[in-house]
Length: 267
Image (cartoon, rainbow, N blue to C red; front, side):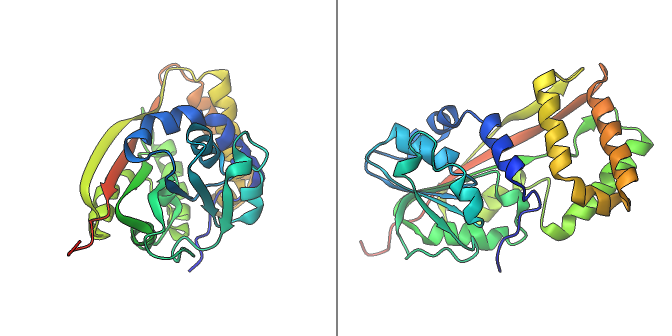
């Protein structure tokens, strides 16, 4: 089964590249589990911006960016470090690599969009060498944690979440990462939780523009959720007005799970 992506749009790839400081993310989450000369795989790499950051930090590493969309992968080819990254496209439920190919396999903000996330994590574990590491980074509470929430907003949120459900999206994927790692046979499982986004009071202009773009990318889904373009537009404007309110609180948290593939018995 090929993993589909509900936010399939070149603008979303560009938005995500602008939103994250790739070098800072790599420096924060990967040094403890990688080394110079390591074979590293980024699953759900998008345009490969994080993979390029890995290549910049560890120039001797062999870095592969894997994504379901070859056009999206190509968007990051000209990034600094991008020329050193191998790019492969295919199905994350059936990674096209032999067992034990990589020292480190990681994903960031991918599993929340995947219906068969257990299969993907099992594949990530399979292509990790015995003794190697898997890192899973995903959100909990995206889209659904707000205060205050009146009846109208609750109804709109419920309709969006219901429309997303058939795509495989789960707003609470973060809390499931530990279970997914253990079910894939990984050991030495460690969990880290921290705030991901927090808006307390009127949203700033940069973050508002990010939300407006994200909602525009999601417009086809919103039109299905609300039945027509006009109702979808009203829902978007209502949410942006909510973000402009000084009384608004909206937030999500990020879970990071790091784990190891056990050494082969008998070694």
